[in-house]
Length: 455
Image 1 (cartoon, one colour):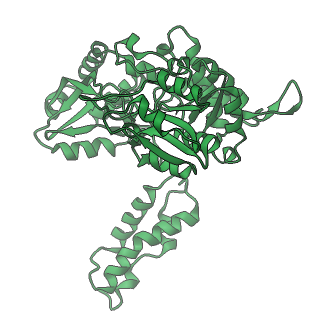
Image 2 (cartoon, rainbow, N blue to C red; image 1 turned 180 degrees about the horizontal axis):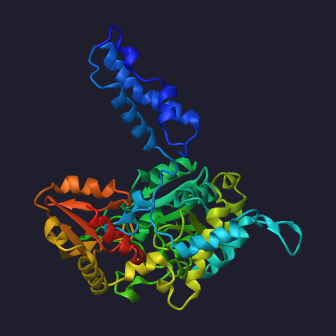
Image 3 (tube, rainbow, N blue to C red; image 1 turned 45 degrees about the vertical axis):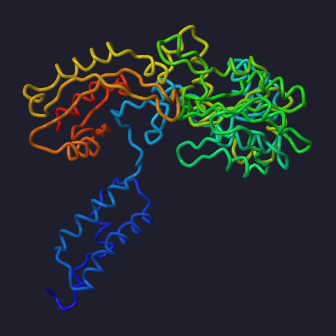
């Protein structure tokens, strides 16, 4: 060991020289990452604890920097069974949509330009009218997510006034999105009525006063209250709102454009069914049951949508050309008699267990001889959830690949799949590893076979 161990630590320039020439990473960022990693070796050297060789330090630092090689977002195989998995990007987007998007968006586009009139246009005109038609509403507006849609609506229609909401609908969804907090940040005042499990129409009526700005009905999304319960229907709230000239706002959370009961799944109130009850404004997500990109969708009466659109904050939460173009393409899938055949999210949600079983058998048959036994691999029936608070209390029948290899732990096997050249994310249960087929795209079957074969 030299008298000054710090001199054995490689220089930043030495590490830079060891990086691949084609690394897609700004040098300034590479230098920062290198220094971050070398700091630990420097600390060890100062404490007289440095044991790594110079070559070991170079190799380890290069490997660390390569972990940040751009792009870091990778295409993966979702074996969790959760179709609308927030960590994995929620609604999966079909390659066909992306191919069309690439052709349309290369170069310049008419995002805010009216070609026939040769004048400035409005970006919302590309999606607002078709969204309104599908929802059975007078008008539609798109922002960057449903949290923004709810906030913008409340701020526009009830800032400085009270918003009446049932205590049973003060929901919190993933990421600490809480309805009470959103109401507070919208500069409105929350007026709670009823109890957690029982709210009556008289509770709303008694709460209405000179300071009331709106009535809010919120979909409970990721939970249900059962047992000794009472709730006020949307139709009753609409009648009450009309009596007192108050707008009724419905936050639907996921927001379905089709009735999933037609496909053997639990019934979920559709946006059109909500609008048929006379709700003034409804908000919902574009990247959940609708099957599109992250976006917040607002539909309702033209005069109210116009006011929301004119809110100065709209500019801060509006969507760009990528989202608008992709959403336009996805909304187009609902023009078919069977949208489940052209909308990837709907296709995955409605694929039955027998089809998944057949795919699983094909996977097992395509594996190299002995691989099944080596990995302790069998097909099993499973139950999954839609995810992201959609169809919250329902489980969906599925099929999974269950791994119980004798020579490796389930935890290590799961990590091996996640960190492979073609990442596969599954789940652990009872010291076994599972790859559920519910959210595996049909086009990924061959890749999944290759990933299993490589273990």
